[in-house]
Image (cartoon, rainbow, N blue to C red; front, side, top):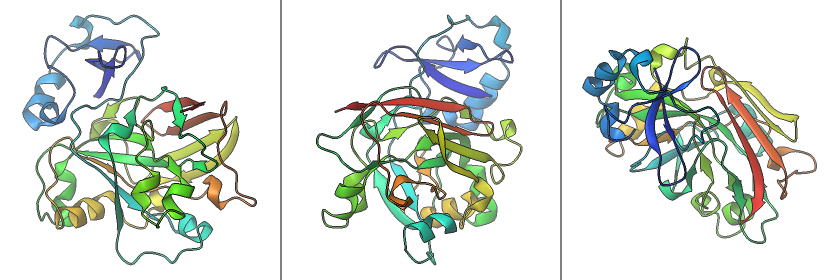
Amino acid sequence: MKLVRFGEPGQERPGLIDADGKVRDLSAHIRDVDGAALGAAVLAQLRGLDPCTLPLVADGVRLGAPLTGIGKVVCIGLNYADHAREANLPLPQEPIIFFKSPTAVCGPQDPIMMPPGSEKTDWELELVAVIGTTARGVSEDKALDHVAVYTMGLDMSERYWQIERGGQWSKGKCFDTFAPLGPWLATPDELEAPSDLPMQLAVNEQTCQDSNTGNMIFNVAQIVSYLSGLMTLLPGDVIMTGTPAGVGMGMQPPRYLRVGDRVSASIGGLGSQEHVVKAG
């Protein structure tokens, strides 16, 4: 099952993608796509619906971020060995953790708003896991039981604020539109294996990132288990699992985004995103 939210910003409604790739309206069955909607009972109810009986949404409708009511966005840094090498940083022995603000979340085709005066806005394509049931101190073998859905996201990063303003990563990662999610939330049965998904990102049609989620240092089960030992993970919490090599900061010379650039990204089974960079 693929869940979406459609409509103008602030007026999104819940929906799903049918077998023909069309959006169907779920408003009669759930209030919205949030943590409460990701519980096992609600997902089972939605899975039992015949999509053909749901109202068909007009083609071309805007897709918003596929999840609302996000409590926290937890991010894992340097989780691909090649990305750690291009950043000239040692491989982590344990997951590196930072946070993004939920207000950074936007839709899969919304503009990316460059912070005023930015010279170092960068891109990072990531697999995203979303929690469906409360996780507290869970073991690795039980960790994936707490993941309701997967999606894709961009961990947009302003490197000047991240690195040169005190070395606090979240400073450069919480600007509005710096966490595009979507286009949909995919239940695990929609993916052959979250640990083996091709991922690509291009800027102005030039491929920059070309990798696979199998190249993670810490896999999703390890990440969820580790995080649940540090904090309680609640339904609707978002976990961004790290990015592979190919970010602008790692290029020689570094290449950062400029107004008018187009960023396109995809992960196997999770759709694609298209963004235009605009001045904030």
